[in-house]
Length: 257
Image (tube, rainbow, N blue to C red; front, side):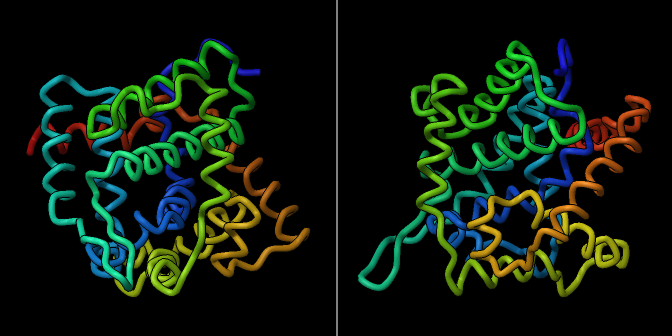
């Protein structure tokens, strides 16, 4: 049981869950089809990660000015992401509160999932504080405070219900392929993608892993468990300046901009 731990969202190890969070986001059709038509995954696979993490770090750790700047950036990016529903397809809007709620929910659940894999179960007080931090990530945009589940028990019910509504189709499978097999990007990115794909598959719920066509077996599960134990043993002793490097870097970039 982990007690009294601060700055959980600043831990760089949470980024190993980025693929899991994005796949869960796009499995919601209202999110996935908007990403497919407006995202630049194929051209710049790191762009969405940087934009998302800059916003998250700004809301939780930034100054009022940094939060306002990050909010403006996200709203500008979201403005063109909309389409009216017609007889052949579902409409979507990046400003839709329910869609934003789902995106933030995946970030929260993924952060806790990865963190507890590395450090162990959170104590109640710390878990509640982390939950409130992630509530702010949504309510700083268009999620009304009353829409965010009131507590972690309410979130668990919302999460379980939402998982039942996820589905993949040809559109979202194409987005997933671009995410997991980027056709461009720096060499280092292509080199780390095989282990990143493996960890992403291991972190996904079973049904969604199958929906995205990711191979998995008991042998994969044993290897995944060993991998995460090794990551924890290597990561935990690192000094804070290393563990929080991405948070400090993205906030510095935002400040310069």
